[in-house]
Length: 82
Image (cartoon, rainbow, N blue to C red; front, side):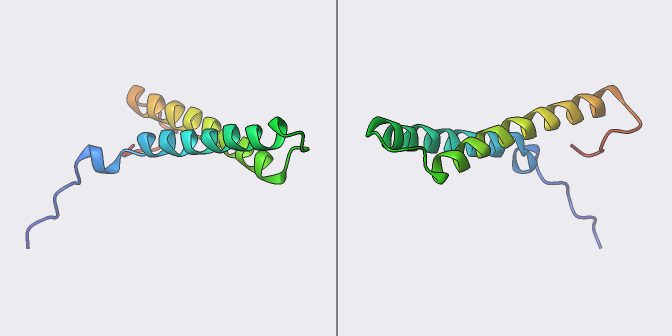
């Protein structure tokens, strides 16, 4: 049997997916901020959920960048294959 070839890098790249997700959460923040704060309502749970999504996305991007840099410099504690 032949070995299974590696997937192309563009199919295994997680960073673009996280960026798109972060922008989706950011769009939710803008939409709910306009709805809640623009019409005199108090901030809803949906607004805070979207804010948490943006914050967690940014933290995730930071960790992914940190791990990728560690893997490139050859750190023993870094994840491999990213």
